[in-house]
Length: 416
Image (cartoon, rainbow, N blue to C red):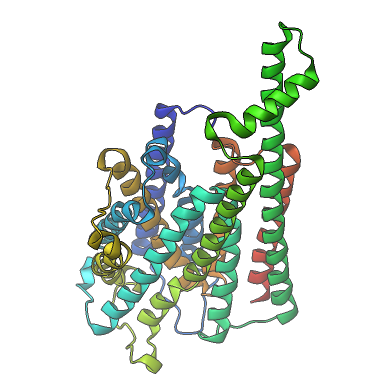
């Protein structure tokens, strides 16, 4: 983002919060006014309007939820990923319970050994995935990381759907073609990031040389001399790393970001498995099917919230334990990070609520993968607002990559 406008930034965040809340309210209202029984194991209900409303709500919330991770105050604090996750996890647990109180409390608490175990496993995978998300956003950007992570999410969710939950696959050629399209989209996304980086480096060199030329022209030095001096300043001024070292650091950051995005996708694609186990049972591991009157997505929320509140301290201690024992304590940067972390958590909780309806009614193979079309909104934020991808060639390559991934997601839906 070239120039930070605090009023615009927080106005956009509030607008996203309001719209996400409206999607949640619409889903709750539709469930009450036009209740549709959840499909039994292995079946889907493609005519259930609430399933498609869930897709739309999840796409919006997931497409916007990462914007506050790049708030300048969070960046300036150099906040650790697990510290940000503290605020994030707390908000998700609270918002999940508020949604449950508003829409699902009539059936009473659903705490039992099965539901709590599913909530704990869900929470563990989710916390790991969101720590990876924070790292990916900061390493490769809010536009690029979702194409990588969402593509893997679609693939993993598809495998879970047909291999474990017996979701039907009507056309294997179409399904395999969809996966190939998704892979091509990921490769093109990586290419767009590389092209953008090269474009930015060229622009920076041109600006520096132009500035050097203006300053030195008065002394009678030529352009070639200015270029040589400018290159010397680039490589030696203030102890800055050489061009080769800068490229190495950038490459290392990009690799770390891609690995984080891949881990995010692997975890994210498995999250809804535990909702399915809660709803339909999983006899292989002794999980009994939910038998209450409230829809499974609503009944699962208390277990999800409890799982987060239990597992976050455990994972936090594992992550920070060695450093704390060595005398290095985490810095929580409350004044700079708390609001961004809490609102981010609210975004995700509302997106997840809608994604649960998409999964329950449209299936693990179709419903949840469709929610990953949020990469369109991620791309809009990254390109138009944060200006992460620059240059016509890079932007066109990214748009093409996103279109190919979306075509793959659509083909996946048509094939199942």
